[in-house]
Image 1 (tube, one colour):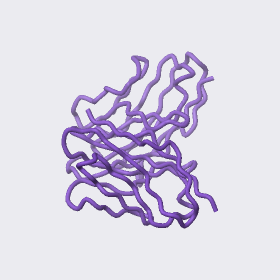
Image 2 (image 1 turned 60 degrees about the vertical axis):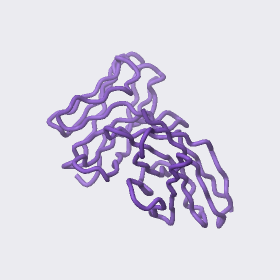
Image 3 (image 1 turned 90 degrees about the vertical axis):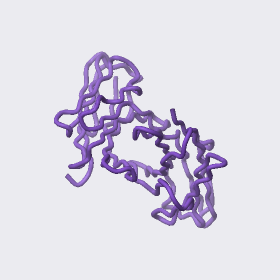
Image 4 (image 1 turned 30 degrees about the horizontal axis):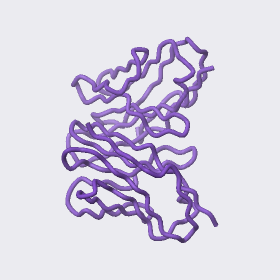
Length: 115
Length: 112
């Protein structure tokens, strides 16, 4: 596609339920990032995928958060047993990784509200 | 590990006035540096980036930034601000491994 696509754009869920957020990166981009942006906050790094390498999960805030990337393309971020503090905008970005001087392109984000 | 600090949470400037947004980073070597802008209800858009070479980089919308190694800074500037520049600005730093870390952001308000 022309850009990074995220779905759904908005998600309201009840506390304790599981949610899945999807990211379709730009075709050919080998690197994929997930960030979280809470109200009035900056972007908090969550996880980074690069090709077939083991992902950098150092930013995941708890074991309720997990992510996978199938076939080196689409990625799903899963939050189990959601809590109210999980409410935020979750942003996905992709990037060409085979050369150094590139930047990340961001999707519009998924706004998650836990009630 | 790298980190980035944007000391100003928000800044207000008059339309037509000059602008400088501060960004300081921490990293043991020369990092890659970026400035992104996020307008209300919009996604993040890259303004400019620094990888190597000339320390003064030009970006879109009339913005520029200067990498100063001695000060570990990458401040964003614009000579004359327009009302449409009101947005949130994020500085980002990337060290080894392509992990990009963002600052907390600076919200710019433009007054008529």
